[in-house]
Amino acid sequence: MVVLAVGSPVGFSTIQAAIDAAQNGDTIQISPGTYNESLVVSKRLNLVGAGANTLLRPGAGNNAVRLTQGSSGTSISGLNVRGGRAGILTTAPLDGITIENNFFSNLERYAVQISNGTKNAIVRGNTIRNVNVGVQLLSDSADVTDNILVANNRIFNVTGIALYLTAQTNGTSGSGDFGTVTFSGNTLIQRLQTLGQDLRAL
Image 1 (spheres, rainbow, N blue to C red):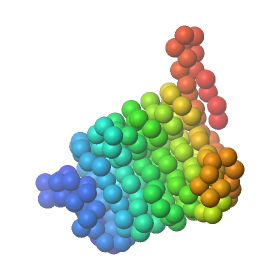
Image 2 (cartoon, rainbow, N blue to C red; image 1 turned 60 degrees about the vertical axis):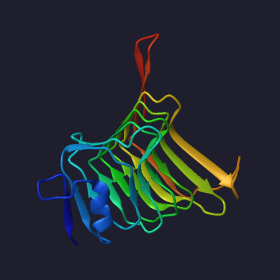
Image 3 (tube, rainbow, N blue to C red; image 1 turned 120 degrees about the vertical axis):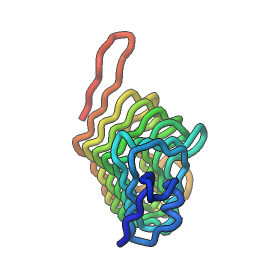
Image 4 (cartoon, one colour; image 1 turned 180 degrees about the horizontal axis):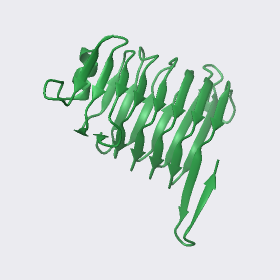
């Protein structure tokens, strides 16, 4: 395993450049800073930011991170995703994805989307605010999503749905199958402007 640095004086100037240079199993260590990028990951990597100070801004209409075919086993942590269409999404059936301890805000659609057929995924410890959908899980009878853990996330001020499951049958909405999906310890806080109160649900 190799550690590739981004943002340090001797590191890569962009996250995508480090991803392109990396091999399966490598770690991308991302220094604090602002990165105006929309990332595509097609190999097994560990993306590790420095928390709130590692700001990823994909720009209006763009997704922050797309996990495509070949990225099974990838983990993403310590990123602050702000603005754009969506946060982190899988675009193929993947196995063993971990998305934890990230920040998501001001997104047009969802913070995290797990697509049809993905298995053994963890979405944990993320802070999500000012989005349309917090975490969206998709499944189809022909490509069942299974063994998903959504735990200890804090979700604030969604305009749509905080935790959203969509099941289909051969691409048609209305019925379908999920495998095991576990929700545990999530905190949902929705501000009611007219009453000045918070609603909390675990």
